[in-house]
Length: 278
Image 1 (cartoon, rainbow, N blue to C red):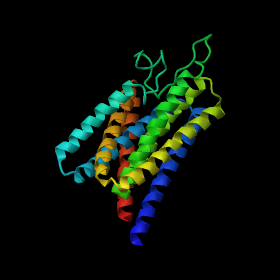
Image 2 (image 1 turned 30 degrees about the vertical axis):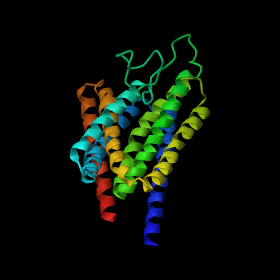
Image 3 (image 1 turned 180 degrees about the horizontal axis):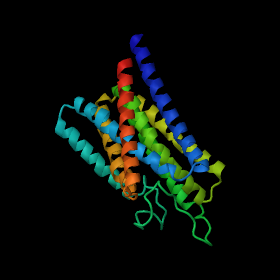
Image 4 (image 1 turned 180 degrees about the vertical axis):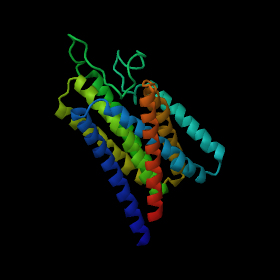
């Protein structure tokens, strides 16, 4: 009976985290893209960098090594994960890039998701081309995030909470970019919101599939935690930090450092609270 209660608690945590992760990120993105100034997005990105780095070095990496029978194998898995996510980004699965106009093709444009593509004067939208690409990439991304959240909760509730928080932190500014690109692609605000919400449902599907699959494949949990480590580290270092360097002035740099530290402190605090309650 206790084992059954424990399993249901884990499943409840996974469902709560994946549902909340999808809804919070999409609602937050919609509110920011609809009402807030574009200047608020870099603030969110700085905080997300701190949350991701905090989750990697305070929680995920120690857990990955603690569960490992071979530290070299675990380190190699993380290294392989970094290469994997580099390849996926090159295939434009996780990169929000317009077919002809994006940071990858024009170094003078801000890195996504700091600024979404905007139409040229006298040109119409792209007839849904970039929007469809965004939806496919994000659906896959959200599905993988759901699996990683499930693996984290199956390993340790505290690790699951921190992992979910870090994922939500970087999903919000990313979803802002998605929302703006969908608008540019010709979708209405209502359609963009509905499609982003539908895409976020893949996180719940990934969480449920991960939970039931990993119940009988526990040996894969450590590997998935290593991949989650690589994923968050790659997003922070390769995708988000380069965009922060585009604001080199002292005031912006101080703001970024403070917000990164705040993101790290949040992860530490959440971990301390979760550990105290466990």
